[in-house]
Length: 346
Ligand code: SF4
Figure 1 (cartoon, protein in one colour):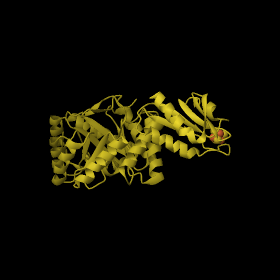
Figure 2 (cartoon, rainbow, N blue to C red; figure 1 turned 60 degrees about the vertical axis):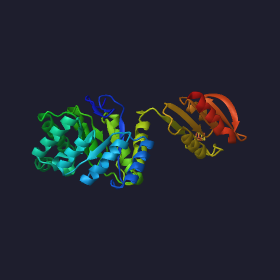
Figure 3 (tube, rainbow, N blue to C red; figure 1 turned 180 degrees about the vertical axis):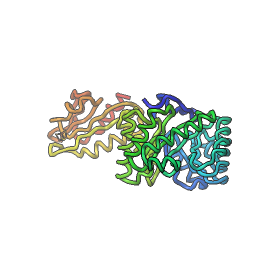
Figure 4 (cartoon, rainbow, N blue to C red; figure 1 turned 120 degrees about the vertical axis):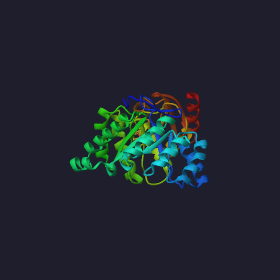
């Protein structure tokens, strides 16, 4: 499962069987310190483990030094063309920098590697369709084979220069290309893989593309850190990312299951299920709570739930534990009873 090697970003380990981390990227102006502090806080509050920010020039790097001191989670410097900024970011104390090797010459890469070795800075080697080497592009076009081959060839360059503090990513906005490329890469790569569907868009479409792509890779055991790339508020990326891990039972959290309802349901199930979600937000405990419309299928169908509620007749509902009914309450007392059960469990 996942990578064989482990990379450390401050105290956070990535790969080698570590918990899968969720990351995102600041979308605000990185020179606007108030906006940056607020967005860092908001992302951490949503459960973000790693935050990346674009370092476009020296002024941005100077500002970022304050963010490094402020953030409780590792910050990653995203560098594109100016190799001197990569050196400066490593010297400034970033635990990881993101470099696209297609954008820097071999000599400059050597300098970056030497500096990162000295400072114990990890490097994310990012490969995408736009950074493919000309020969690979000519031979395979933008394809899974070309992306995986490019990643492996670039890994070899780093290894030949004695550098193995690497995290690798191959991304494309095409779900199938990304999944197939990562499957190919995974067979020959020992480094942690950062996975995601790049530029997946926004709203439902972006969420679905990300969930399908990231979910498919995780189900194959591929991926050590994930980023959901959505246009919009980065907090949404973290919520969806954590949701994907939750759906695959890869994090300890409370799962609220609820039935789709039918005419047998006589209470506002959506309201109760939403309130249960609110009530359990932030509780880091593995638990399943069921909100079922009626007793016909309720307690029995939700037998694996730690506890739950199922609507009955006469304005009454039953509270159950592992399928066994423990009491009957009026509809307006459902939340009170569920709250009691939650406290009993935690
Ligand atoms: Fe309908 Fe009851 Fe099944 Fe919900 S649990 S869908 S209300 S039969």
